[in-house]
Amino acid sequence: MTIYRPVSLRGFRNGGSLPDRILVVALWLATIAASIGLGLASIIYEWSGVPLHFGGTDVYVTIYPPLVFAAFWVLWFGFWWGFLPAYLSTLALALYSGMPVGWSLIFAFADPVGLAVFAIAYRAIPVPHDLRSLNAVLFFVLLSFVGGVFGSTGSFIWITTSNVGAQQVLPIWQGWWLGAFLQNLGIVAPVLALLGPAVTRWRSARWTGAGHADVTARHTLGGAALILGGVLLFLYLSVRLNVDAFERPLATGAATGAATLVESTRAIYWVMTVIIVFASYFGYQLFTQWKTSVTRSTEELSAANTRLAEQTEALTAALDSERVAHEQLKAAQAHLVQAEKMASLGSLVAGVAHEINTPLGIALTATSHLGDETVKLEKLSGEARLRKVDFERYVGIARETTGLVQSHIARAAGLVQSFKQLASDQVADDRRRFRLREWLEDLATGLKPAWRKAGHVMSIDCPDGVEIDGYPGALAQVLTNLVMNSLDHGFAEGQTGNLLVTVSTPDPRTVEVVYTDDGRGIPADCRAKVFDPFFTTKRSSGNTGLGLHIVFNLVTARLGGWIELDSPARAGVRFVVRFPRVAPQPAPQPVEADSAA
Image 1: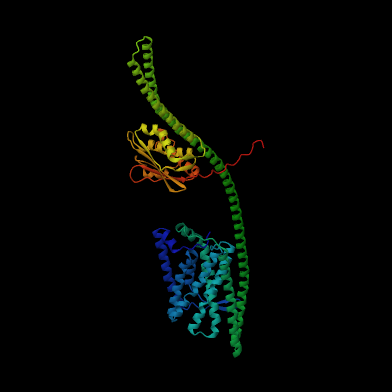
Image 2 (image 1 turned 90 degrees about the vertical axis):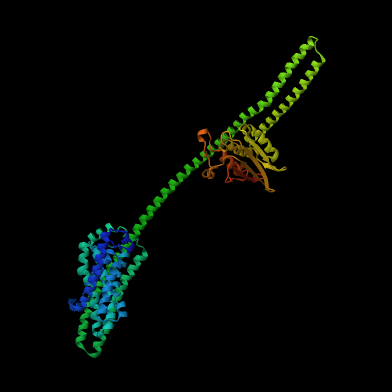
């Protein structure tokens, strides 16, 4: 469909091949040259004032070929492509005829103004300009008339600068607009009907960016106002010029002049009748366009509402699925957290067995040795061979053995107590008050089998008197996971190092625990992900990647604090944990309704 689709300068540069662009520019420049030549020829060969019998009277029309070329460029490529040929040819004509330069520059705008009617109207109301339908033909005829009227305003500048007699004002104006009107109907219209579709296809295939923007109510009303304004301008000028023309012959008694004006008036009445017909058609066309636009908008709105309802339904279903998946994820996460806790506790139990075995083994060896010595003493006594020196020797062995057994049993008891407290803290989730320094020392003792086995040293630097009202189980899990993370990832096999827990109190209500090691550190590309769930660099070794994620959740959710990785540029890691001395109260859990209710 040959809808008005202007080609901008940018679109022209970006579209089409180089030969295509050269061809179009060459034709355009040739058109400008031909328009200037034909415009001068219209003056030299006096193509104005051609007689034509119309409406029972003789009228005189002006033939101006440059407008034909300009009309094709406007309709096929856009307004500015036709503006220059029309403007330059009219400017050359005015200067050649002796019109002053200032008036010539203004006069040259008259014909482009008439061409602008086509660009604005076809932009506002997208009617095809291939003239293959009755609507297209009628719309083109109406625009040709209105464009001719607007373009004929230049005739008044011509009359003013040419010293034409008053009797010639009306005929010159009529001939000007009527000539442009008839040129469009007799030359432009047939060419558009024959070649318009082919030219449009050729242009669209090369400049696909040429498009017709969405038509708004503002565009439609603007085009309607322009066309109706042209009709009103014609009516005003017709009546005004006729009245002036009648007054002069009546005042001088010139009957011949009056008769001529009567004939001119009869022709104007015919034109006014045609105007009424086309104005009625334009109103019908405008109403049809408005109705089509409303129908299309209603259909688009209905389709949009349907899509919105479908999207809302799909979104609701997706939210339900996401809610179920989130609940399942929370349950799985809780299970994994508990499993991680028990796995950590299992490693400690294995270490406990090894650690307690040493003092108990020594105590068992000592008691066995004491038992052997007791059997020997009984035998000597039964044989009446017991001497004082034998008895004193036995007493010394018994004293030494008892001391050895007591010391190692006490050591084992201390280890058991530490392990018991650590296990209780990690499994239980009770809130209680505890002194941080003593608690940390017990924790270090409980973790001793793990860090001492690899040859590491763990130190505690905590001031006295720091008391916590919170959850020792959560804090134990945090520090245990940090230690285990160092043992698993921080040191190469056979490498020994130092683990340090430093405590400070930035203010009376806050505790800061800094955990550091002097191992190989964390790679820079991994630091931002260390707290992510399931992130691990040793998955092949059985690591789950949940250790530091659990640490983050416990610190933020249970202890009410925050944790950050503040690793220095050198080797080693540095975790900073800060939390309040008095832990926040946990959020109340919703009470599930009784299933029997």
